[in-house]
Image 1 (cartoon, rainbow, N blue to C red):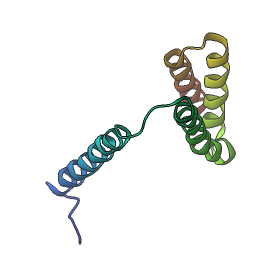
Image 2 (cartoon, rainbow, N blue to C red):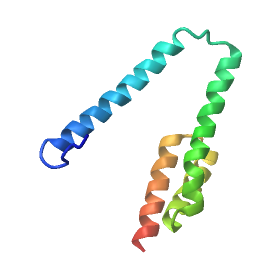
Image 3 (cartoon, helix red, strand yellow):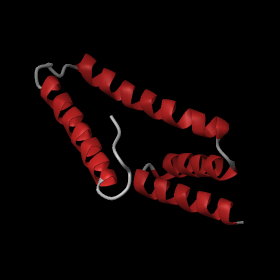
Length: 102
């Protein structure tokens, strides 16, 4: 199946991806409505979110450029100091932008 990426083709692709994302999110909520949320399930969910984050960031830390590494370091330090994700992410973005600008 081929869809043209010119004209309306790109919009169709984006809409299909949005629908698939929405279906998986709603499907997850639906499936989890049948799972009793015990202490064990809560620990599993919290553990999985951390491991997914590490799985996403490790390749960036290993193969990324100086800007990416500086952004990760800045975000980690600010997060440890302030314990607020939004300022930490903002500082990481600024650090990457400055590192890549100069």
